[in-house]
Length: 407
Image 1: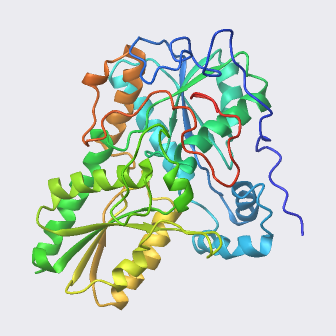
Image 2 (image 1 turned 45 degrees about the vertical axis):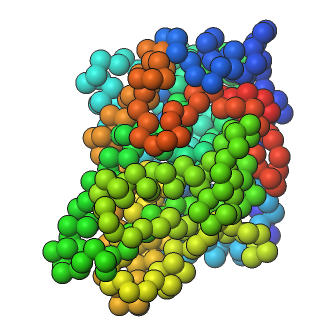
């Protein structure tokens, strides 16, 4: 059975374009030097809102999943095991509509704050593709783009893979020598991203109290996407000696970033209530270790609790892995245990989150000093320019990527 992908998805780039004297490919002038933070004003022509993408109907589901798993040789029979999640919702992922809403909200807030930058939107795995967005920008005369990936943390799938796909799209569109693309920093600890979670958890705790549950009867589960332990250990800047996570699984940035954000949100919204960081949505062979505990295992192992609050700390919107893995599977697990359960909202188009994205844009437009940028955890402000060797994919190694030092 064929496992071809949609021909509109760009092929893997053969290489990248470096201007004379530059160490960062396809970057604007001040980012080309490779400094971690760009504290010099930069003029941009447009914003490139970049997302994962999702099917818009039943006929799109398998072609979309072929795109997601390209290069891994997974037959359609196995893809159907995942397709059932999408088919449960009519074959339509909510993520594209959410990105349309986010694009509109971002454009409105940019205008309100006097930032004259249009927003173009492209996906990694479904229409509109990133190469379509770049061609749209080029046709409008936009040569310098500031990219926002709809993922807040540091890992291969949430950062470097976007940078690889931008390289693929630039080469596919024939724009390597004409278009420059920078990326906003990882924003997991920006106040705009964190505030919606604080507000959501505070409201859920109040609801649990109203339902008659004491603090000692409540457990807060901060949920994020699991990734292979080997990839987690290589997340973030490899020159940094990252401490091991609470379970001793990894010394990378991914788990530590999530733990610090969860700790901050818990302290702000649920002081004195037990919490833990849990993982979801693992895939791949059982022989490959992934970050644990799985949220369903964590729920099954709870003792002395009567209420569970799930906080989707790893996600910016209510896409399929929130709606299925949390709202369906994890909620069913909790209810089968006789637990009262609530899932708090993702940032979506919360005003604080949208305003935070504008702040990230202004950091680069104004060349804002690092000391004046928002960061609510001890890890501080992440680099504007990804460091050499960050977020390696242990299975595939380093592919051509932009918006960071090589490799």
